[in-house]
Amino acid sequence: MTSRDRIQTLLRSHPGEYLSGEKISHLLHISRAAVWKQVKVLRESGFDIEAKHSLGYRLVAAPDLLDGADIEAGLACRLIGQRVVSLTETDSTNIQARRIAEEGAIEGTVVVADQQNSGRGRLGRSWESPSGVNLYCSILLRPKIPVQQAPQLTFLSAVAVVETLEDVCHLSAEVKWPNDILVNGAKICGLLNEMNAETEQIHFVILGVGVNLNMTASQFPDGLNYPATSALLETGKAVDRLVFLRAFIQRLDLYYSEFLREGFSPIRRRWESLCKLINVQVEVDQGSHRCCGTVVGLDVDGALRLQLNNGKVERILAGDIRPTEKK
Ligand code: BTN
Image (cartoon, rainbow, N blue to C red; front, side, top):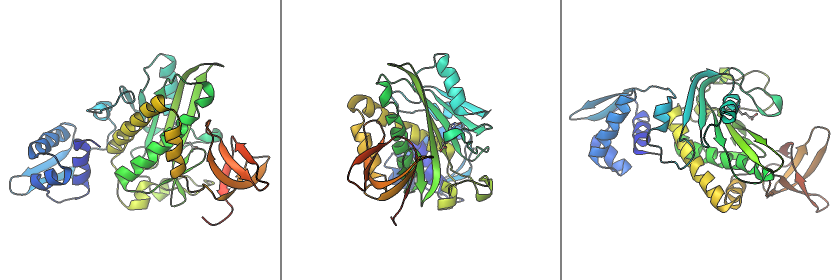
């Protein structure tokens, strides 16, 4: 996180309290002049921060807007977040990202929306996307990698989301193959990655990321076929969407650069370390077919490696997995 984001997180976590410049500078290891400078930047972007000579700084009100310029400001990224398209309301950020990709938008463009009215989930499902509470974003990538390797990017976004949940919300999350993120067994984030390619060449990949940040229990739709949660429900604390998105973009940018340099192995290892089902007996539901086995890990193309009871290791390309034994 940048100093600016760390200061606003600190002020938010002390509601109604004054924090002296000295204390902030000590906690964040920055000078008092830097604290003052960043407070000025925050005020310019709509934060109401009171400054009292003898007491310090107090947050009076914070905007919860996903303004494109605020998202981009001071991001130290190589590729991702060079351009941000911020929409108040849209059908689906994945649809909009695809549209601008076809028009030639640059790699790393991020499309974010306050609200989606046709948010898309996996397997043709919809994704509940009310205004003012969650993160809905899609990232456009144009990797020069073989088409078969495109699914690897899903795991990259999963690792970046888990680490951002830890960093910004102090939540311990786990990954669930193929593209869910869970906290205490309930889904907090879904990933929907889509590709446009010819036989040999990827034109673009869209990483769609939906994270339930400040959704309340009554905002979840009835009839979900899995338990769902939000960061607010887990911690009791509201999350600043701007801080979360900026931290996520920076992490994703680092991992994407690493992926282009070193390939899939580092991300695969990180993903496996965040998966609680490795070495656990699971049942795989593939619609018409079910099988049981022990999860061994990920294959190079993102397939799940499952050791069947006869010892043979099978590659699972799609399906829902659930543990058959207590974790
Ligand atoms: C899932 O079914 O788990 C995947 C959900 C993906 C939702 C995100 S929200 C941002 C992006 N835009 C969409 O329409 N879907 C993805």
